[in-house]
Length: 254
Image 1: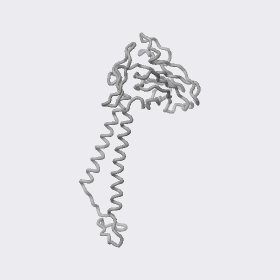
Image 2: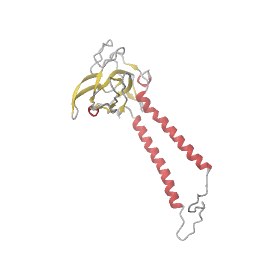
Image 3: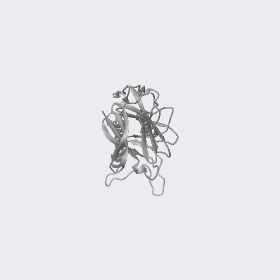
Image 4: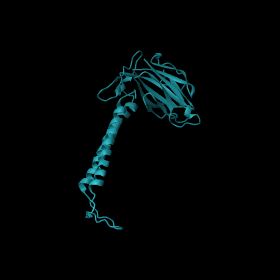
């Protein structure tokens, strides 16, 4: 993920906890399976009074049962809590926060990675629009907040520099000619998205994030671009016959 190390850090921690719980659980299982076994020729004293067709005697340990309930509950609450960090980094409100306010003319986001939180922090952000329709993506680098169509819209009062955001076309093998969105590394973008027909969902492969795009409803997604490269934007919500080829190119440059 080029957007943030938060996702990788979270993945690593989940793997470590999975290994710990797995070793504890299966270690306990194998220990009991081999430890509580009578030797050959030794008479088994049958502490649970196990008999064929008879329910075994109930041996409970209140301390063990409480611990086996409370400890996993604490772990689940903890894992849920740390899972909010990457979610907040991607879907947090556009009102200030880790990406500041909307950039003014000529201002750069100046992205940097916060070593404490692992999140990408920006001085400001640029607004772009993404519109989905059967079966193509359209992009607008210079949207007008008072008008929403996927077409050419009135100016916001200044032209967004083409090195910050530009739109074109690109030939993608297996997909044909597709729209191309060019963004600049080191800049953060707030994608304001909407569908003209059915539900779509752009999957931004470069940063591994996606969000549903709904008819007549705006949704937003943070796109902090940190690394130069080429990738694709695909639709991950079934939207009709040509869903599988609904794509676009994404080029992040210096």
